[in-house]
Image (tube, rainbow, N blue to C red; front, side, top):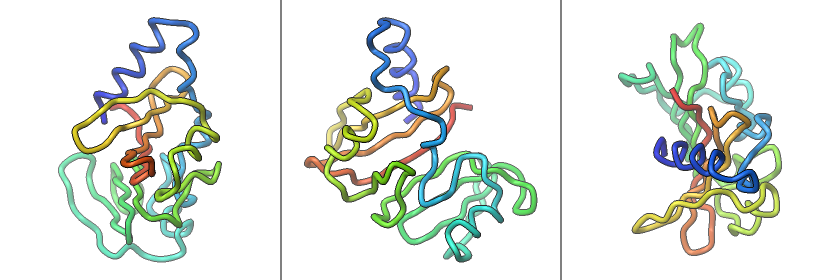
Length: 153
C-alpha cells in the first residue's frame, strides 16, 4: 500500500484538478478506532479485548480482532495505532463505509479516489491534505473487501 501513497502524491502534484482523492483526516478511523489511538482507547472503542496480541518487528505489536488488525508502535501502556485494517462488515468509517458494501458506497462518501489495478483486485485510495496519511479500499468484483488506514513512515 505504500506504493499507492506515492501514486497519490504524484497525482496530487501533477494536476490541480486531481485532488478528487483528498479526504478529511477525521475519516481515518475504522470501527471507532482512530489512527494514533492508544491500545486502551482501541479496546474501549471496540468494547472488548483483542482475540490475540502479536509481537511484530515494525511497528511493535498488533491487536487482532475478528476481521480487524490494529498495529501499534510503542508499548501496550503507551502505544499509538499506526495502521488499522478491517474485513469486518460491522467495523466502518465515520461516513458509514464498510467492508462488504458495493464500491459505489465508497464513491458516494469520498469521491472517485486514486485507483491501482492488481491481478486479483483494485486498490482505491484517498489521502489527507499533505498526503501523509490515507484511507485505502481493496475492491474486488465491485465490492469493498478490506478497508485500511495508515500514515507513511
